Image (cartoon, rainbow, N blue to C red; front, side, top):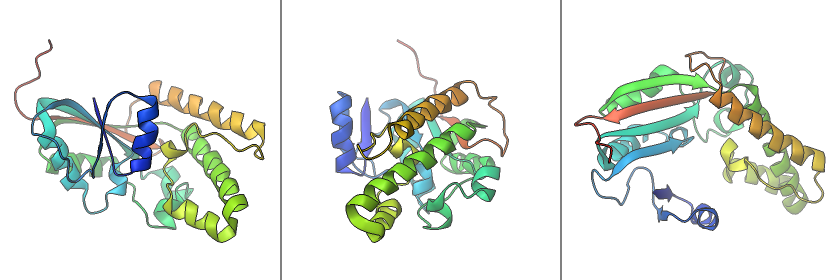
Length: 220
């Protein structure tokens, strides 16, 4: 198992929790050999790669073995993100963009993937968790850096919902808020497990799987 991240800080955090190989690299240029992985996960990543989505998927295709599988997740440009403006990174800061399911399918097809399956999952809990985590981060930054510093932190230090998952609140933040954050992340996980796996704009997240062309993988 190999983990790849563009942030050395994230890799250091990951190293404390998992004993795996970690590589500092970008998704568009992986320092890895061809045809070496059975599976690749790209979770909440592709929306951050503006104008480089197909390039990154080409790299994934390159490192996968024939018949290997990619699992991809990204926010759904549906009712919630479009009308409720739940993601300021998209609408205010232009940090990343959301996709419709058909767009994800086209990106995977452009990168020469086959047997593409795309569906939506998740509901209210993940967005609620995201907003609570965002509020916690803002309070922490505001008390340490003031208003200007807090705005810069929210704009440039990660608005991804998963980056906020499980973070510890400061002593000045209420214990109730911390418990609420943990509770909603648990509910969000259940929403994904028990989702209808249907195509709808009412779900928060797009999930997609696809396989590299070639002979199927033989199980050992």
